[in-house]
Amino acid sequence: MPRRLKVAAAILFLGGGLLAIAPPKPPAQAAPTPAKTKHDNYTETIKPKEADDEPVKFDMVAIAGGTFDMGSPDTEKGRNADEGPVHAVTIRPFWLGKCEVTWDEFNMFLQEVGVEDREENNRRLKADADALTGPTPTYVDKYYDHGRSGFPALCMTQHCAMEYCRWLSKKTGKIYRLPTEAEWEYAARAGTNTAYFFGDDPAKLGDYAWFAENSQDELHAIGTTHKVGTKKPNPWGLYDMYGNAMEWCLDHYDKDWYKKTSVEKPALWPVNIPTDRRFSHVTRGGSWRDKPPALRSAARRPSDRSWLKHDPQIPQSIWWLTKMDVVGFRVARPVQEQDNLKGLRSKVTLDSDY
Image 1 (cartoon, rainbow, N blue to C red):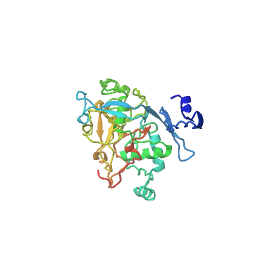
Image 2 (cartoon, helix red, strand yellow; image 1 turned 180 degrees about the vertical axis):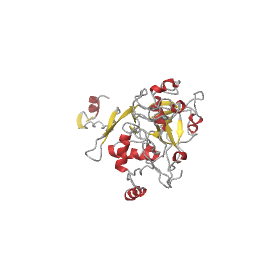
Image 3 (cartoon, rainbow, N blue to C red; image 1 turned 90 degrees about the vertical axis):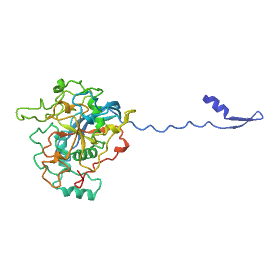
């Protein structure tokens, strides 16, 4: 009804005389619209604890939400049984690190929260249950003769990578975490459904990745890591999604995980939430030591206890994988965190089962 008619209808007459005028009700106020988080690429700055030290910067790439086919078909060359069945997955918008976390970033974490002995972490947690814990010193040289500044950080456990993300979140006031396995594959595929984001033929892999066939240099006959971002990016602007360092995901590994997912309708932002067990967790992307099949978008590699076989300590470290110089990670940031991941932190302790 037009506004003027509503006002007229509110005027009451009795015996042709004006009796009363009821003023029109003001329109109901709409609920305030929540502020939207701007979803663009950005550069993050990690400010040092000491004023004289230099800040460290890294880039985050905005990844639009969408639905994709996760896993690989039976016909894909190099496929493993844990990659099927192919199933639709819906992903929320998020950001993903343009490159893998480098030693420049990771060393700032070590300097600020690293400890000299295991008991220091226990003392911190007794004083404050939400306290940040930090890595103990490595049993051997942490660089393993690989490059340092600008090179991917290596050999940390999934627990250590998760604590890094908690530290980074507190430093920046933003929520950072490891990407879920589904988020990682979605970003790696970048809208494609072939074995690699450039097609099914691995012949072009050398343009995009450091792997077993091209990672050697004059000082490393077997191969080594290389500075991040020196190969071509994938179609969404992400570097080293294949090779260099294979990357931790948030999920516990389950070889039958895909079989538990419906193929009738898309799974909504799935994640196999980690528990207090040390193993097994998902890594993705392959490394500088791997051959092409391990670098495929759908390829999954689970961690296992053998990754600690060179650690003589009892109990073995929950922070470092001695001599496992092929694994690193990159960080993710949700636009709106899913409920089952809010406040998530690693539950692993020295008392955790393997």
